Image (cartoon, rainbow, N blue to C red; front, side, top):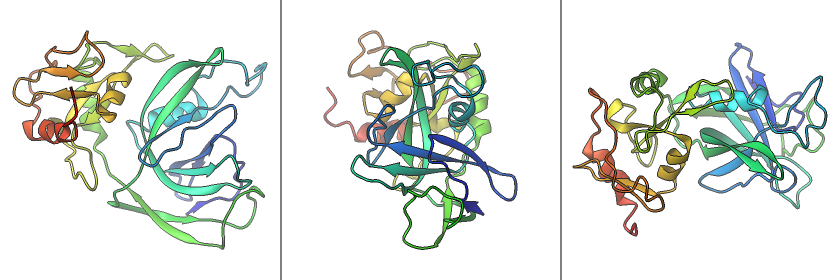
Length: 274
């Protein structure tokens, strides 16, 4: 049973249901220091500031990859239920906006410090039913909006994370587009798996190796924004903005073949690409 009991309305909250399964609450604000960019198809969510003993001024210190930030980063490869709550600039209450998935993240400068910025997308497909999400009247923030006590069954796409992990190891966590190997704060190599034809409706892509690319966070975002297309026959990369990768051939390891149908599907939405 997912409950809003004890919600604080502060950034990222790590929660566990009555079966011990982890889930997350995200509290996004339209304006303020975090300035989350909420859209209809995808949006940017700013991570949480340092917490705990020894933190001088968390409003001015660079954010760290721990606590809620680490939980969101880990949800890219190991998805957990994530529930989004939102408050617009002219509202005085939180509104539940549905479930989301974490697509990618960046560590970037803002206002003289570094912050984590996560790219999120709404969950569209219903394939695995979870316990009820219970909006509880008690022990919740006074500014939490609900019309009445309600119960909603939620679900999410099931991904075979082992496939992505295997491909990341095969490519040694290097990007198939640029060849770069990024590293996290812990020094470990980091890459992301991208489904060329997205999972879930209306795309109905398959969760299989031939539909997956291993990418750095930047080029993963470029695929999501339609800035890259790959020739289905030659695997030549065409990038709308980066001349250093435009014209290069996609790196392919033995045993990892990309289905041309998936590349054609991805390119269909890029008719204005020049």
